Length: 361
Image (tube, rainbow, N blue to C red; front, side):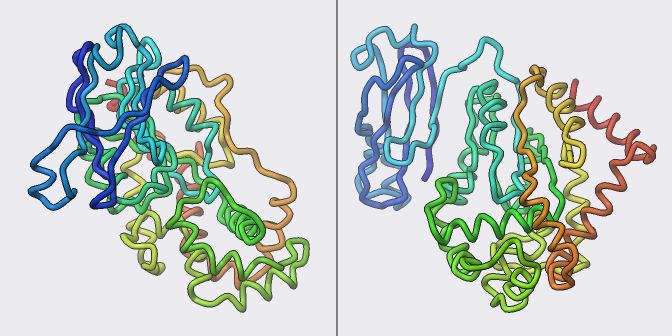
């Protein structure tokens, strides 16, 4: 899906929404802070879209003015979404002073920090959380929005495919998690997925995770023997979901790509380009850094809390050699990152302080 707002002149807005389907007829949902105003078909022909073979008839453009929406210039909270997927196409600033930054929050956990994204995203003009749900092309389009300078994107992306945007004005932030806890969380969610729908998984996720969900459907999380047996018997397509997911996110370009110990250095090198790197072992440091970078209050900034039951599962996994083998690259990566983040690492503190000072000006 491709989309953009070409201009907002107050009384006239014009943009486009190119659907994934060649013959699909796109519709936009228009709303403001008081609720939905209307749903309209895109009726403006974009000949270039037809010429490029992207759409059958090119009716993918929209134009809104006072004849369609009376008083449109005064509607300060106006929003435009794709009516089918709910994807935000454009909105006017929802706060008096949007954060003047382009931010990518790399999500490394299978359970997204939805409340955190909502809390932070509302301070930006454009926000798109869990962007991986919409596919690679739509994610790229969000990075390419050229008429907006206040953007917040989060998602479980394979970062090598978007690394170029770190040189094009985007600042990356991440909150890393303990590898064993994340493995416990993944197994728990996969087991749950076998019994019920999980709303935050996109269609691609559901396809990739389905074999793993079936494999862990009957695992007993309270039994070390059951966990060990499930991990040892996991076929390759199940192992792919569990093997060092963070290192893979930082070095792989396809979901099927495997990583080796030699990839850890490349993962750390890419991480060094991040503006803020936090770890759930010290989430307060992450909160403070976010508040300072965004210039927002962090008093009620919501972060995912660890659950005692999953901590217990993580403890059982720590005793299993098979779990250690599956997480080998992430364990090495996590060790070096946590060592570098210690207060006793003066060189890193100096580098981080210098980078933060540069990013603040």
